[in-house]
Image (tube, rainbow, N blue to C red; front, side, top):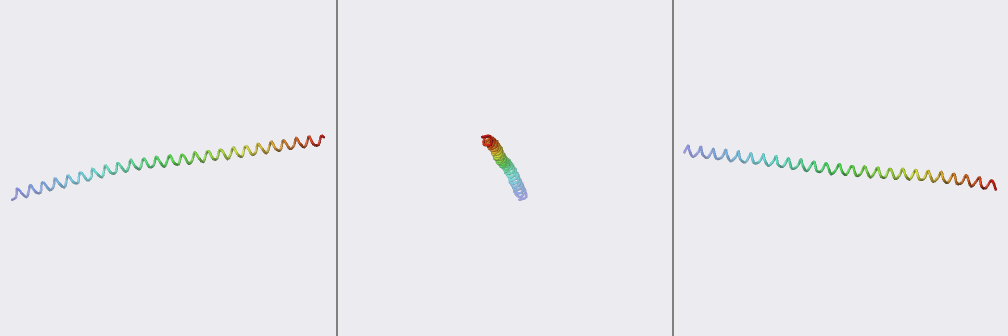
Length: 91
């Protein structure tokens, strides 16, 4: 009877230890998987922010170019009007 009880207890201890080890192994694998997914998500977010930033920079450059073009056109118009005035007054 004692021998059977000792064997049962030993079998139970081995079974519980195996379940605990498998459980911790699964938890570690799950944590690693979540870590990799988090790194992938962070990379995607970072790339999205870079795209937004580059788009803003392109729009800013376009806006600056438009301002420069408007300024150049106004200067040309003013020069053109000034020369026309000079031409008209000379006639």
